[in-house]
Image: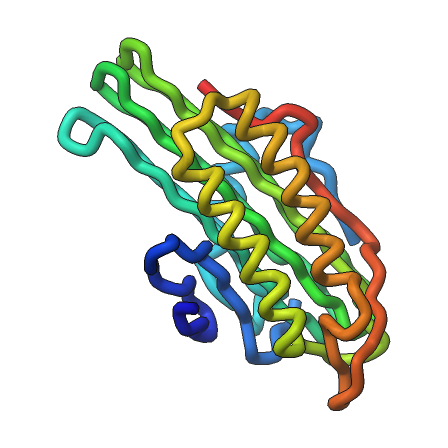
Length: 234
């Protein structure tokens, strides 16, 4: 098992471990907001300009951003990141983005997958997380670009973090997400597999003993989730 560092993904090993990103410090932040009415490229521009990767102690929570690009010099690009971040402030505005592009090449492949869970240990007054996925092929022949973004917020009775058991359960999901990301499967198959894994991700967080508050295991419950019915692919 690779080591898990705060604010960064774990490294690769054999078998390849998924990228598990955990935020260990308290964040402050922005109720669930639907981006469905806005054009996706506008949503991505707004989210990308406003949300640097990692935690933002002023802006309202952790951000998980996965961007990959393939081209003639690098015809295959794939990356996944699974993030679990505690939040204890009044304004939740965490952002989760997956973006995959393939440009000016033949038969290129780009896959970006982002899973994010925010463990809310407070009673936020403003709640506006963002979740978006986009995949674009530009000047390509026979290229495949695929992006999948899943975001869930779970409520705990107070400030909380993953227990060792919870960390292991989430790492297992992260490993499987990474395997799908690098599998070479088609978009429809990846969509199906990742839909199963997003349910497993929620289960890993909701299982008694996975999350602790004040040193004691607590039960959490999902309060909001966002995922495309059909992931973005080009």
